[in-house]
Every structure is written in C-alpha cells, then in structure tokens.
Image 1 (cartoon, rainbow, N blue to C red):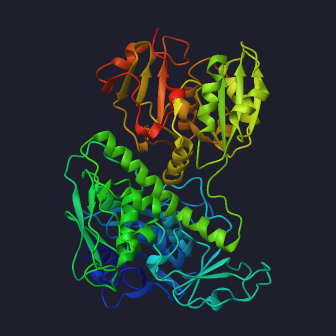
Image 2 (cartoon, one colour):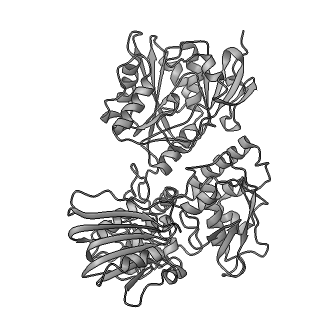
Image 3 (cartoon, rainbow, N blue to C red):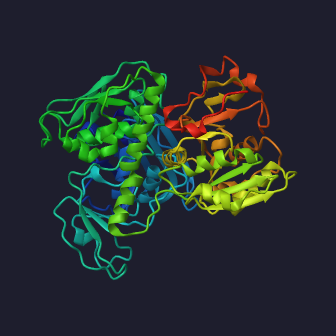
Length: 619
C-alpha cells in the first residue's frame, strides 16, 4: 500500500491525475488508489494528456523505471503542483529548477520508513507537467557528460520493460506507420516494435527508410547510471547465495531479496545484495518457458546482466545455449566456474571482469550503439582520449610508451611532453605503432604545470588522461576509466594508488584505499578529465610540484564531480626520490595505510604485465 502517495493525494481536493508505470501490472494495484482519482497507465498506446490539473503525479516502482518511462511521458497537460512517487527507493529524487520555469512556491522531498520516496514541487502558476516530469527523470541519476546522441527512436507498441533509458526524444505510437508518418519533422532512424516488422517507405526528411526491429525476446538495456558498481563492498562477509526462481511467478529470489524478472534490478535491491560474497547461478534444466516455473529466459538473463553490471560476483555452471546467446559469449564465460570468493582479491577481479563485459554488451550506451550501426547512423559511444605524458627521464621513455601502446578497446592519442631533453620523434612513432602522437620538448626550467598545459592545448581528444612515466597500467586502464565516466557521470575520474611497488625494498603493498565512490582525490597518474572542464578551471596551474592536488582542488571549487574507480589495473612505482609528490618511502609503509604486503613485484592479475615490464631487482 502506498501510504505516502495516498496521504499526498488526500491533500489535493480535485483535478488530480496520476501517471502510473505499467511495466508490472501489479504495481498499479499495490497503490490502492481511490476510485475518484484519474489514472493513466504508461505503456504501449497510452494517451496524451490534455487540460489543466491542480496536481499531476508520476508513480513508479523504482528509480530505473522512472528513467525508462520518460520515453512515454504525455506531451500535454498543465499543473501547478507536480510530484514524483517512487515506491522502492534509497533516497528521494531531487530537482534542479530550470530558469524558464515559474518561481517555486514550495518544494519537498521525503522518505518513509518503508522506503517510499515522494518529491513535490509547487509553483506560483501552471506549467507544462511534461517539463517537470522530464526533469525528475533526468535528475534521477548524476548524468553530466552524456546525451542520447542524434539517434532518434520510434516506439511502436513496445512494452514498458523494453523501453530505452531516459529517451525524451523518442516517438511513441501503436504501429510503425504511426510513429514514422511523413508529417513528422524529426522522423525516427529506428522503429522498435513488438510485432513482425514491416518495411517502411523512405522518409522525405532523412532520405532513407527507418529500420524496423522486433524487440520481442531481446534483453532490454540495463541503465548503467542506476545499476552499476558504485558502492561495491570489498569487505563483504555474507555467504554466496543462490539465485532461484519463485515458482509460479516471474520473480527470482536471492536470499531475502526478490527481483521481478520483468523489471530487473533496482538500485535499492543492489544495495541489499552488497554484503554477499556473491551469487550462485542455478540455470533451469528444461529451457525457456512462457511464464512457468522460472518465468522465461528473458527475465533470468535480464537479472544476470544487471548483477554483472552492478559488479556482483557470480559463480555457477555453464549457462545453457539460450542464456549464453542472450548474455553474450564474454559474459557467459565469466559466470561459469567456481572461484573461491572468500579470497578478497580474486573476488574483486571477477567483479571487475563481470562489469566490463556487461557494460560492453548490456548497457544503454552499448544498446544504442548497436541500433545506430543497424541504422547506419554516426554514433560515438565513447569520447576520444588524449593521453598527456610529461617526462624528464629519457631512461623511462620506452617503458612509458609501452604502457600507452598496450591499451585495448579504445583508440588513444598520445601527447608526449619531454621535459628537459629532445626525444627522437621517429623512434617514438616506431615504438607506438599505430597510436597517433604529438611530440613536444620543453626546457628544463619550465614549471611542470606549464608543460602539462602545453600538452593539453595540443591534444585533440574530448577527454584528457594524465599518465606518469614510471607507473604500470593494465591494458584496460583507459577503458575502465571511460566505463567509470559512463556510469558515474563524473567530469573527473581516476583510480586510487592502492597497489604500490617500493623499488628500493623490492616490496609490493596494497593500501587501504576505498574505491567505487565519489571522492576528493584520485592518483595523479590516473586523472581523466573532460577537456572543457580543464579549460574552464584555467588548465594546469603554473607550479613546479603538487600539480595534481592543485587541479583536483580547482575542480572541486568549480563544482565538478570526482569519481574514484577501482585501482587493480594500475600500480604506482616509488623510488628513493625524484617524484613531484614525494612524502618518503616510510609514508607507504605506515601500518595504518597498508592492508597487505608482499615480497617482490606482486600486482593484480588485471595488470597483465609482461616480463619486459617487470622491475629489475634492487642493486
């Protein structure tokens, strides 16, 4: 029962409209709304709303549903009071007022002890409810650096659980012909339908026919800004728990957590699973059904894809063919096996591999990129990356170039800023292979900040990544930073320096550094920053040392967000001196900071180094 929603409706005497997400039909019944309340179910063929209302309320089961039903919000209808009710939430949806809106009269955001959330906005005069409801959907996740791109989708009778994520430009209707009519000034590139696809004519605006795709049986995209590794608990202690069907329902049980296969995971459910060491997958023996004992293969694979994207470790037998095809070979292979999840590092490594595979296959960004490919529409899912490598050590140059060249899954450009020496540009290009490079040389007296600024100005990428010349980087380091940018929405992303090799002692330490959270600091050799933000804070400060700290402080002062992802694909090297930030080796051996210590060079398996990169033993 939605006590919070009904209490609010009791304060509105008349002319109130409740828009209800219809992904799960039982959700509307659980609201127990009075017969006198006007209700519109948001689903295939739901009508637009016209007229004026005293209040308009959007009711959804969770935050992921709020972002999904944004594609079906009514195009008309005015109200002075607009509210958003989320039945299962970790926090209320907040709102940032837009400058074109009337002034606020009142704003409130509340949580109930049962986990309901209600946000209410009252304005001094009426406004199009769509404008406010759309802003609720946008503000349901921290999303500062990504849009939907120029791929326009049409939705022809698509069920609510198959909708795109936060697509406010989608064109909804009941048939492909209706959403791609010649009268539309912004026609779709792709029309998604839940019926047999029929060809459409060439549209006069685009000069091409929209592609019609039947989405029945497809695993819907998982919203990576809601279901993601943020908050991963590497100190989890509760035992591995099986994922089992709830017989006779479309739901699945993981301990005390019940997930409806039609909607998938919510952020609240992910939070409840964090204390588990992992989840054991039990695949049904008799294959997919039409809603019987295990709901069908779509619901199960949807839940597994969401668990992977959240970084929840999973073990089990090889999935059957019908599940493997939908999960994708990379993810299907990762959920096969029985590693000891009580071993902390092995558990984290599996979690990272799972989230990588899910983000590459099942995220909303990957889903859109596939549709754009089918429609032959230009689409750039990830920004271009320029690596800024400033070095004053010619002896480290070949090692540093190898760290850049080994990056996979992303195309990078290198800006090499030699500090106090003139590198051989031809040799640099030979060592980099097909990695494009800009080679600079700066006099030794030039402040380090100025060297980095010159490199940043010369870079051609949308985002810039500062790498150090003596640190180790795994081949997925750049990809991991882009993935973290994708699901965190942060303008600055970096890693902690939790793995550090102390060269004079031939010792590896792992520090007690947290990861997967919004932070104030990240390791300087991993700072990935949006180019526009770096320009707006005045590039790198003209200083000789502490340039990383100065930059992160400026970003925080400008209101930018900083996110710290995992540090398993990065290892810092510490020598007896020569670092721009050098607190001394004893700092790294402080027992309060060290979580574990090994003799020799012992990185995470995710570093994937070769023998040529192994440090020489101390003299």
